[in-house]
Amino acid sequence: MEVKARAPGKIILSGEHAVVHGSTAVAASINLYTYVTLRFSTPSDDQDSLKLVLKDEGLEFSWPTNRIKQEFPESSAEPQSPAPPSCSVESAKSIASLVEGLNIPEAKIAIASGVSAFLWLYTSIHGFKPATVSFTSELPMGSGLGSSASFCVALAAALLACTDFVSLDLKQQGWQSFQEKQLDLVNKWAFEGEKIIHGKPSGIDNSVSAYGNIISFKSGSMTHMKANTLLKMLITNTKVGRNTKALVAGVSERMLRHPDAMAFVFSAVDSISQELTLILQSPASDDVLSVTEKEEKIGELMEMNQGLLQSMGVSHVTIETVLRTTLKYKLASKLTGAGGGGCVLTLLPTCILFTPHLDSDSVVRLRFRCRKSSC
Ligand SMILES: Nc1ncnc2c1ncn2[C@@H]1O[C@H](COP(=O)(O)OP(=O)(O)O)[C@@H](O)[C@H]1O
Ligand SMILES: C[C@@](O)(CCOP(=O)(O)O)CC(=O)O
Ligand SMILES: [Mg+2]
Image (cartoon, rainbow, N blue to C red; front, side):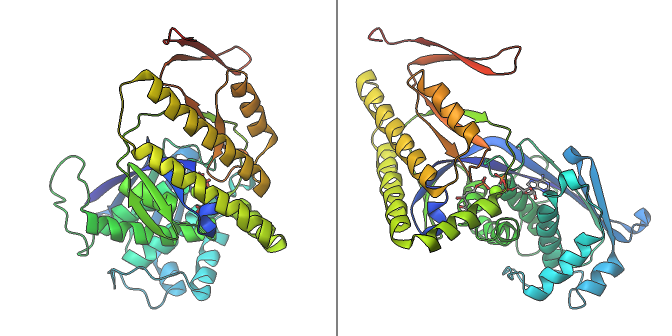
């Protein structure tokens, strides 16, 4: 049997980092996906191992089932419980020992946390059952678009689809969607995977990847938003690699050094996200002036959020370059995701016809034409 699953990446419109400390954040899913294919071995395959294939990276790993049994003597080839366990210190050691022997190339060592999350989710749900699991993704890894969460959500979805905890008609062709209750389960398992990759995730990335659309999120609880506002966002990838776990830890350390000042920063972010939530949900309008007014407010909130992200220490010189470039065109931008490089969001007013143009020096130049007669 072969099961394919996919889960989307995301942009965070406001509130990254602060959301880890209890502030509200707003995120939307995007149409770039991570895909996973899960195929359990049959006796004719003569394969007594668990294989992980990371197609985009050109990497393939394999663990003999005996080796997995040795590290997880309690595990069985069948799922024990629908509730996801947290990875204990003992289990983390076992996973580290399974990952250590892989000789991952130094340049791709960041992948180790993804492999660890894979091993934890796979062995917790399907024990030492032999299988081949392949991944491919449209998302740039480590760029703030939630590749880690979409990896965990897609994997949890495929693994759970092959259990009795989730009833799907696997004989049916084409994509099927999970019901709300099943998504809750997928989301809980994916969160355990994110914990392994991020250290201390807020849960916003896996939630928006699992449920899609646009959500507001605070202290582990999610509200589906009925957004009435069409927003056009340009995503610029600075191509500066970074690691969410280290950036999140850096903000927590700053919080410990300056608890009072940081509490004000987080509280300001909370107000920004709440105001953004209200604007996005306000009634739609065809009137160009009120649309422009809304967009100006959203742009201003994004700029304020960016300022607060700078004060958390998660901006980067390349992010500042994108901000300066877009500001020349009076466009508001902010980093999205963990920052430190990665992607930047720019709000494109809906009145603008926009043509991104890649010059020979590989720098994106922007060309605009305004549809409004007033500007
Ligand atoms: N397709 C994938 N295959 C293997 N690991 C992945 C994949 N996608 C994400 N990961 C894991 O997630 C990490 C990136 O997550 P993170 O630093 O949170 O950035 P982001 O989530 O913004 O892309 C990678 O270094 C890797 O460990
Ligand atoms: C910084 C943070 O708010 C978002 C991280 O997103 P990403 O992994 O950079 O895509 C962390 C979190 O909420 O778990
Ligand atoms: Mg991530």
